[in-house]
Image 1: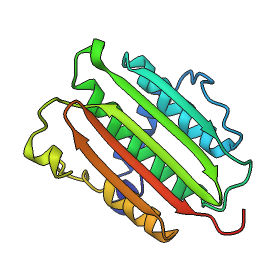
Image 2 (image 1 turned 90 degrees about the vertical axis):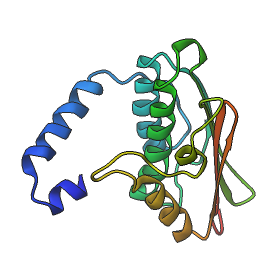
Image 3 (image 1 turned 90 degrees about the horizontal axis):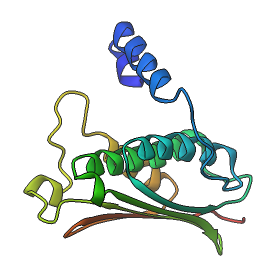
Length: 174
């Protein structure tokens, strides 16, 4: 949305918001983590995943308050889940899976996401290079920047049939 605004593309912004409205006309309550912002993001994205016939397994336990800015949480969760859903949609329905685990433990925010992926990823997928053109390909850079902001770690791994992402961020005195 920021890109469309910065380019003065109000028509594109309107079309994007219309698309969101259609896609999120009914968001299921699939997750109650304890954190309202996390629940809003997870429930909207996981509802979209289920509509794409993706088998979802999600476990999230978080405190009501996190010392992570809402926009950063949205960047991290939103981009990782968007990528996972998109990867699953390229596979036959019977092999689409997404597993997500989130928790705070010993002052660390931890997120683990695994999703189905091609058995033999191409060069771009193995090296996390997007094949999209235009204003695409910035998602993982933004995720990395958000994680770095909190002096955290982002680990990405491609294995035959699965993609995995892990995020760990110290939260100070929680």
